[in-house]
Amino acid sequence: MAAYVYLSHPLGLSDPRPPAIPAPELVPLYTIDKDGAGVHILRLASHTGTHVDAPCHVVAGGVPIGAFAPEELIFTRPVVIDVHAEDDEVVQPARLVPHEQALRQGDLVLLRFGRGVVRRADPERFSLHSPGLGVEAARWLRQACPGLRALGMDIPSLSCIAHLEQTMSAHNELLGGAGCRFLVIEDMNLDHDLTGLREVRVSPWLVTGMDSAPCSIVGVL
Image 1: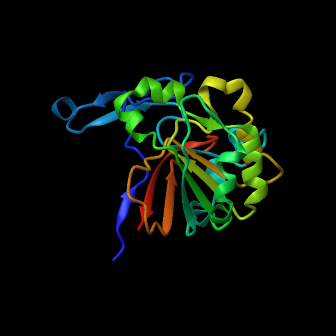
Image 2: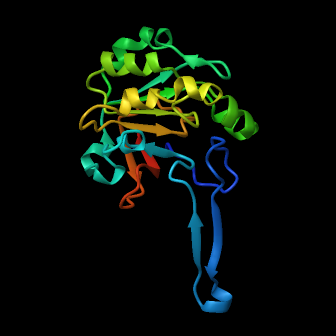
């Protein structure tokens, strides 16, 4: 029998996030006591919590998240790679090359940095000092793994926040190019035993005109 796990975090108002992303707000509009039914207003940035970056995030005229077909959000060849990286480290291709054979098999690669424990114990460290991919590593990944359709990570951003000016364009390496339909998933929950992971299903918020979106993700074991 299959088992199912959430590979996304539930959205929390005080969850850690990159410094440029404001805290979400949840306020009651109607209440059961006063109005007979409860309705809330949720205000948040599109890159809050577990979210998926579409090409439109960094490429003018790029594909927005709402233009991805359902089958493009289901991955049947997920590969999990454990990567040891220090705080503030800009990950270079040398960290990935030893895993090339496995990486080339996947339509989705999950880079597990083991930052879940940091997210829980030290949210500020998670937000400000997590590692991230350098431009060269992102470029190597796309060139070495032509069958790859998405990259997911348990860090708040693909880019290294401490070296954002140097690493932000790693997004362009993965999401750039005419008609690119690649996806980058950030702030995932990869703390599970993912042995036998055989499918990953990504369910983004489908909001017309939005570049990227918060999402729920289910892994099938």
